[in-house]
Image (spheres, rainbow, N blue to C red):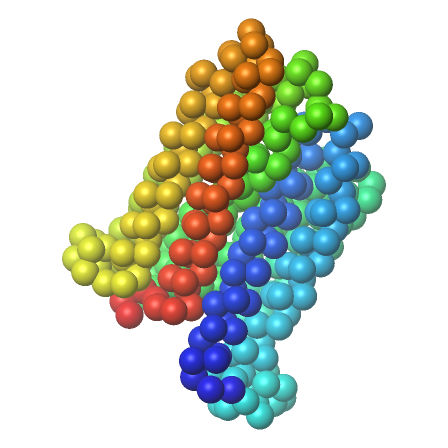
Length: 283
């Protein structure tokens, strides 16, 4: 595989894994935490199963890509390189696959404990791989990455579960908004703080943040996250009350702000995928 073709393939593969993992984590958490009512969660079970299977498949196919990077196109399934690659990717692959299986079991049995556990195990997979593992002394960084991913997944599916669809009544919508806001008011600022700390460490301070492609991508991610947080604040402070007093107009505006959040979340996933494939910490 040519160098440019491999880079594009790696970026597409990483984007797929990041998106599938975040959606699985978020859907599982929204079911586990009761953001979506137990009776209504069945509408999201099929999607959760689909994204979880995607996580397991995409996590497993990282090994052939790594083999090609270490060798050439003919090395995709080389047993010696696979054994070597497993040393680096094995723990995270087991976490991704195991978490996906647990999440599917949680979706099938409607057990909130399994849904929560599946989300946490998948999140741990991100802490077991990536740039923090390349640090001389990772310390608490892998844990921070896992928590960052867990909260990110919780946030990224909000436009899906809070969407004011015709089948969702005003009372049910308001209850979901309230349940989500109660957790988000603390979780999302923690997400931003963790993101700032991780960016600072991985980019090696101000010079790396502003003077390297990797750092600049992290700053773009931060800007998009802050914009999404502003949209969330509007939803919480203004539009929730508007849905209560003027449901028709409130629902229309809520749909628009959630659409903007969706676009910002897509940007974040693309930027993170680019940072982890097209460049790298210290690169």
